[in-house]
Length: 381
Image 1 (tube, rainbow, N blue to C red):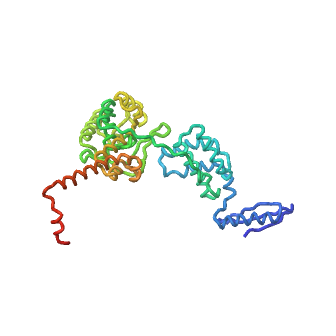
Image 2 (cartoon, rainbow, N blue to C red; image 1 turned 135 degrees about the vertical axis):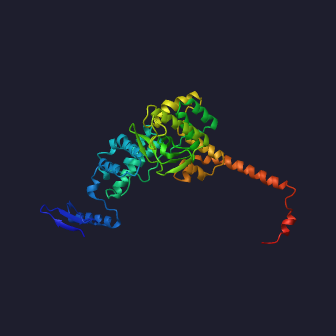
Image 3 (cartoon, rainbow, N blue to C red; image 1 turned 135 degrees about the horizontal axis):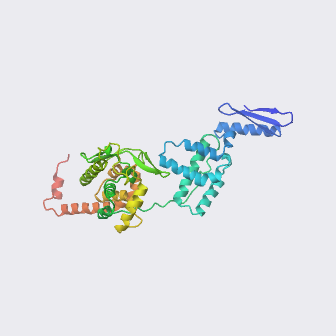
């Protein structure tokens, strides 16, 4: 229960305890104002809407620092991305503001200004994601009653349309790419690896006898440095290697042994930078794949990741089940597979419909097919 006390000055002090037993007080001019203020705080406590006035005064910048220490479950590259969003966009505007002073209108104005400044829809959504998560940490901790980002609507991001290469185009690109990265081009297109997974592939994960490789790591670039971490979905998967590529991989590894003049260690990378060391996917594309795209006269907007998309398209063309494609590419769910490649399946369905029509037409024209009378004469099971 709240307590009221009149001070020597004539003002009234209202005091109450929160759910943790901590005491909070405020001095007001009259007894009725003090009683009303205490009653409101107690009502908030009963409804679960009470906010801690001390936490409410903590600045957004301090909450953002706490937030960054709580996202250890994310990959290093993702945490670095969120830190850059905070440093470049959010902290310059909100850092010194008490968290409770940030209202929905402040968030809406901020987003409108960023959109007017030319931020793309995808970038706006990332800004909202990080801003909302910092504010949600404050809300869950009892610093604010509601999240000012709730109800905020932004333009939908338009996904970049993948570029799908045929097998002949993949081969043209590989032939124009410097050895041994021509093999990497063929491997990504034939197996659907993410480029970061191909760069992080270790010798000990490749089994040439079984024609398989275990995908468990990815080599990413964070702040200009290479870092080894889990795959995008944190899951391991085993991917089959086409027989011809096994021969090429075996020859490549034999060349590595001859160059190093020592046996390869299981932790050695299958593909390395020209002078040794980890292979950065951004430099791989810039120095070797980008020139090869121009030399092979392929679409100028082609990305390294499109080799993975091309693998999926070729699998669909071969009639692969979406579940098999999901497992091969390492998608977190079949929904992701269908969201990205679902538009390629209607052509397969059309081909299947035509094939079914051929089967039933052949049955109708088959003179040895049972007649309706014979069918009726069959005994019931």
